[in-house]
Structure formats: C-alpha cells, structure tokens
View 1 (tube, rainbow, N blue to C red):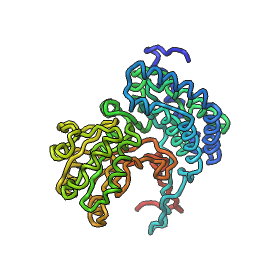
View 2 (cartoon, rainbow, N blue to C red; view 1 turned 90 degrees about the vertical axis):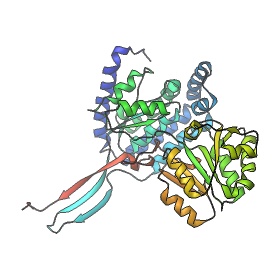
View 3 (cartoon, rainbow, N blue to C red; view 1 turned 30 degrees about the vertical axis):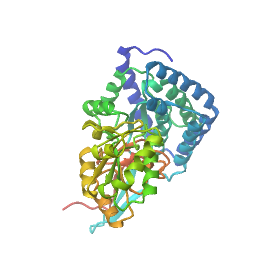
View 4 (cartoon, helix red, strand yellow; view 1 turned 180 degrees about the vertical axis):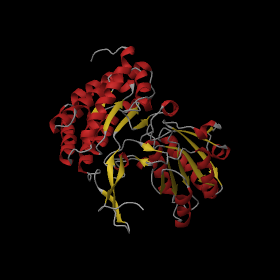
Length: 424
C-alpha cells in the first residue's frame, strides 16, 4: 500500500465519499440474493485467508507490545483461528436474517381514498470509526451491506494491518456478487486527519457510528457535522437485591466482570443491598479476588476484606475495561437506581433478585439502553440478541438505542397512492 501524504488526505476522503454515495444508490435497489452472496463469499474468504489475517494481526500485536499497550487493549486486538471463524459465522448469520429493506412497516387508508404505506429504506452512507477491535471491520461491513448501505470504515491505527487483511475478504465477496467495489471501503491511512475529514463529508455521509473509548467519542461529538449514533461509555452496574439468590449472584458477577474485561458490556460496579451485605459481600469479594480482579470499595466493603482498596470518588465514574471493579453497599433498590442514574452511562445495568415486584421497578425505572434481570451484563451484544452481529451499542435515544443491528441501520419513507385527489 502506497504512503499517503497528509496534503492528499482531504482529496482521498472526498473521493471515498463520492464513491460511497454512488455505491449506496446501487445498493438501495440491490437484490437480497446479491447482498447475501457477498456476505457468504466474504465468510468463505475469511476462512481461506485466515493464515494471512493472523500474520497481519501478529504485526499489529507486536507493535502494540512495543508501544506498551495494556493487556485489555491487546485482548481486544488479538485475532486467532476461533475469532476469525466467529467473524465468518457472524457474516453468515447476517446473511440469514430477513431482508430489512423494502418491507412494509405500516399501511392505512384515509377517508379521502389516499393509500399510505411506510416502507423501510437504507440510511445511505455510514461512516464507522473504531479503535482496537479489527473484527469490527467484518461486523460493520457486513451489517451495513445487508441493510443496503455503503460504508466507509476507519479502523484504529493499532489494528491497521489486521483490518486491511479482513477488508480483502470483504472486497472478494463484493466482487463475486457483482456489487460495487465502493460498497465497503477501508480508509487506507493511519493519519488522524482522516477522521476529521470523514466527519466533514456532509455531502456524502449520512450517519457516523463511533465505536471506541471516551476520548474518541468526545472528539467525534465535538467535531462531527454529521448525525451520529452515540456510545459514550460502558459503565455497567449490577445491583444485588435483598431477595437475590447468593449462588446466582456470585456466578453472574464473576462472569460479568471477568469473562472479557475489555468489552463495553463488562460490569464496572456492583451494588449490594445492606440487608445481605453481611452474608454475601465476603463471598463476592473473595470470588473476584480469586479470579484476579482488583476490588475497590466503600468503607463498609473494605471493612469486610482487607484486600479491598478504598474507592475514590472517581472510581464510581470509571469504565475500567480491566480487571478492576468497584463495590458499594446501598439501602434498597431505589438507592441503587439513584446511584446508577448519577454514575452510569445508560449502557447496560442488571438486577439480581427473586422478587418480581422489585425486578419490575428496576426494569421500568432504570433509564439505560439495556436493563436486565438475573443475567450477566456481558450479554449486551447484538449477536447474543439474535441480531447476527452489531455495529455497536447506542446509548443515545434518537433513532437507535442498544445493539445497532440491520434493523437500526435502516430508515423509512412514505409511499402515497391516490386516484386524482386534490387537497381542498
């Protein structure tokens, strides 16, 4: 790949925008068979090219180690045979989803005889900006294609080689299916100026989807002139109610924190009802410490186990993305919900309880994109929701909220059929 000079980046991004706009017009009327073929052929290519992809990933991993990236970041960056197979299966799962474009969402007749129909349509051109996870290249590319959208992908500099290798397979799928080459494009430079230029492509890009850390989201929120699906942070909570089953609570908490510490659905804070703190906290802390997690807690939690570090005010507002968690004691479900409203990020919050009335209060009153009962927050994932895959989790409230899958990557228009009606 040739070196792109900084002065050439504005023209590069504008040309990518033009090409994406043209491709989007073709994709909007592309057949389901063509889109599905592109996805399944890309999946085949991922499997065939798995060694090449892992070799490219090894370059990124080596550079990341030399750069001093922390373990949770490297975990998100790593690709192996299993994760490549998961990408391939994700594309195949998306291909099997119902066609999201052109369906009738509602229809009705007016007294004057006008027939009105609301049908689903693609959004157009989507810009996806993401950091360390190279699998987003396949997930985002596949989902946008299925929904009839062209997409411009700007991966993180740390995953540049990995994303480029994955892009080869996506391009092969498009070629076999006879779809425009520009349907899925990967920005071919690591220069940060490309992000700024992408955010200014108001004539060509319809929606920006950021997927990354707080600094990235804040930059995009500040600079973007294009509407965006916002995902600021994943400060996810688990509240252990007085009516919680202890064994269930312990199992869920360890899974929610330690299964994958670097994902946005990882639990960062656990709140325990004062009524069971004396019987459950010691076991909860012990489980987490035994699993390799640093526990930071309030004075009541620290008094139970000397291994607990006293939490600072900042800890309650921190998305660790690491083997660290904050524990606190609260008086009841209302105190827990007040804490979540103050310190949470409206991503995913879970209650553990056998009391259906308390569960209902939590479900109805916690204002997060995903609210759970008796389940690990690590299920906050489009694939686990049956969406095939996701482009990210939206914590905003306009257009899309929660996992952003193919349905959320569509809009709609109204079709109105008359027989000569004129408005009086």
